[in-house]
Amino acid sequence: GANISFKINYKILYLSDSDKQIKAFSAVSEHSVKIKIPGISAGDTLQILCRVEKTDSVYINSRKISVKTTVRVEALQKSSTEAGICIGLSGTDDIQCQKDSIAISNLAESISKQFDIDEEIELSGGKAAYKEILRSDAMLSDISHSIIGDKIQIKGNLQICTLYIADDTSDSLQIIENEIPFAHSIEIENISENISHHTDYLLNKYSVEALPDLDGENRILHVSATILANIDAYSLCQQEFLTDAYSLSQNFTLSTSSVKAMLISEEISGQFVLRDSASKTDELPAIAQIVNVTALPGEYSCTASEGKVTVTGNIICNVLYLAEDADAPIASFAATVPFVQNFDCPQVTDGMQVLASICVNHISFNIMSPSETELRISVAIKGTAIKQCNFETICEIILPDTPYLEEASDRPAIL
Image: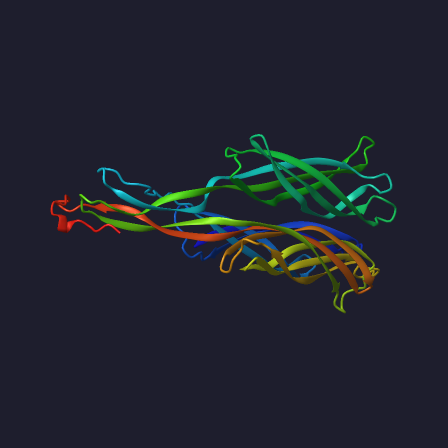
């Protein structure tokens, strides 16, 4: 098993008792969990992903709330083994060998790198200055990579949605959306036509603060973010191995062992758009204006069949909105959007293992009624279909005390 430690950063919005204004504060809770991972051994690498799926809160008193959070913990086990493979015998002139070959993928390089985004964004002229930032959400979108020289070039966008109290006469609630394009290069060692690079990305850290401009007004949004990039390079190899051998002059016995390997059969990539409606419950106030919609992949699974990969899962959305209600000027509700998507993969066959990651690229929304909103979610998927390749090869030669064959009757027949 594995012991996993993580922390949850909370941003809590609340309505003040004294002045009936929306305020916010931050809190952090640290946790650890032990999960069972069958077959894990020393030297294996674990890639852990923890993500919040749902948060419920209960009001206790004017200074305390009880929070219950559902966290999904996923572990991807990466193990690499070095195996010596016999490709021939020598020692006497009359040895005859039987060989075979198999296509396998070898792990050539594994890289995990972090890079930072540090940007100052000036508020547009039509917006009031920041008085207090209540909440800021960020997501990665449209990430791509390419090989340039001895580097892998990563490009993408950091999308930001910020809810803040404006520095105006009424302390109004304002929403501002920003997009920060980024590009970063990471050095790689293995580059050739038969090497494929598999990447995934995670927004590791994110924070914002309001800064004054030259006139002393808080019109600058300082954004700090850290992105984690994991890169695995695999080389395609046509591996030759020895399966049998005999000699007309010597007697020996061959022992075999099983070698486990894999073949990356096909790359899987695609995008699809989900359209669905989300409704609030009756006890929540009516929707006046949507602040932001966050969307994260929930539970999903991939299955392989002849020429096709099917991805089944759901996207968990949280809708934060403003309401025309003095007692509850802001509220939120959750919605789950299920999906089933098929991808054509000509090289895929039944029983192959499919490793895929899902990310949300874009979210748009439209208020249909005071209780319902339409969601349009652009989802990207990328991954690989893997074929397990197990083969038997010679691992040991055992010679008797008198290996030489003198009598013709003791010699093996030739087929």
